[in-house]
Length: 286
Image (cartoon, rainbow, N blue to C red; front, side, top):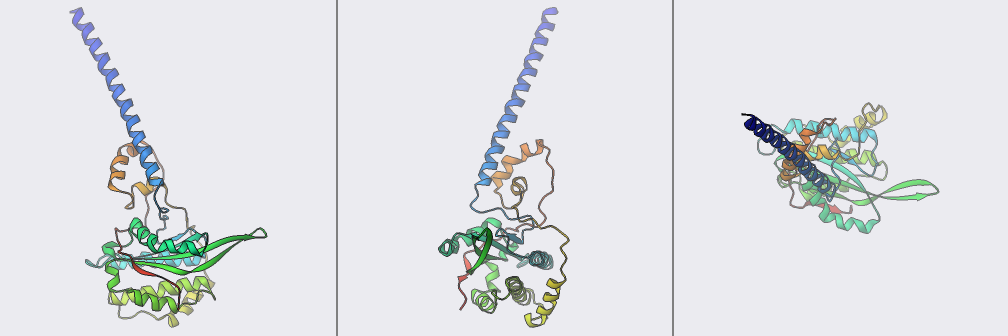
């Protein structure tokens, strides 16, 4: 009887030790994989979109009023269009980047398509990406940022039915960025919205820029910033659980993520899975 009890105690001890070993090994394995995922996500070709999503001012050149307008119009358009089954879920995303010199812009002819796909802009391939580029230089201790053309445009597959490259070219050539850059950005967004709302969603009325610009000027003159808009790319945890990371990243991350207590919420604005075949513009105005 005593022999059986000792054997049982020995067996239970071995079992407990084995369970502890398995747990420790499992934790180590999971954390190694989690670290691998973090490293792989950090090595993405392009910066992760900001938590605001619709505006990604990495060059830090847009006025707060411009950012708020882009975000508000982007959210409103998506909310209005998302109920449309075939062509709903339009997203218009603006981004700015610093480049070393004008020759660097040639690489963006391809990069803009890859960035569009990586950010998954627009549900049902109803997305538009607008890219602005700036050269930064320091003179007498003061940093200057110079806007350089061309502006880059990328259009989703389905969006090209409504916002063609030729129409986008006409809009772009009509805008004066030199007199007032931020008002030019606002005009560009307004004209793109006008085409999409009338062509894709059959709006009966949409004010022309001549009518709307007075209201926009009043908006800029009286704008009071209430919310802080961060242009820092969304953190790595939010990125993993956003639509931008791969399915494998999510599968490998979900178990260790559940074991770690983390603060913060998930991104509110996000890409809806859109893709692009390279349609768009990348040229100087005529």
